[in-house]
Each structure stands twice: as structure tokens, then as C-alpha cells.
Image (cartoon, rainbow, N blue to C red; front, side, top):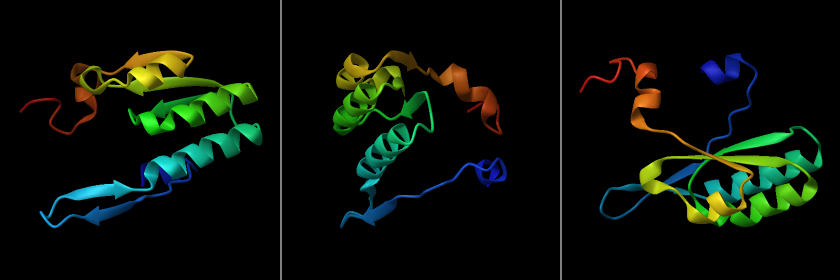
Length: 109
């Protein structure tokens, strides 16, 4: 993995399969919240970049800010979280044209 080659620790969540054969992540928001708070307490970062629109993370963001760290919420316009937008220090919304260049087909459909 490219991230691991850059010495970024990758921790995967769990997927569960529903009876209709669709998949859903389980426990990822809790793991992310715990890591954000733990690393903030260990002074391992100054700014957390939260790439999620899960409003369950609002209490974790509030706790991280109480510890004295900044949180930048990164989301997409269509799924923007009002709760995270309210508690984060900064909000960045990513549009499809911002990331198309990083895909193999360069955004062509």
C-alpha cells in the first residue's frame, strides 16, 4: 500500500453483509473517534483532518478541541454534515473536479 510505504499506519474497519447482499461498515466511527482523542492527548498532531460526514463524530471533535487541537472537516457538498461543520475549526468541501485527476481514467466516464 502506498500509505504504508510512507510509514502511515493503516487500520481497517469491519464490513458486515446485510441479507440483501449490501455491505455496511461497522465500528469505524468509534475507532476514528478514539484515535483522534488518544493522539490529541499524546500531542501527536496539531490539526486533525477529518474526512467523514458522520455526525456521530461531533463529540470526538468537541473533545479534541477542548484538548487544544484544531479540526478541519473535509466533506462533500451533497453529504455535508451540519453538525461537523458547526464544531470544526474549518470546513473544506471537495468537489468531483478536485479529485478527478487522481483517478486512472482522469475523470472520463
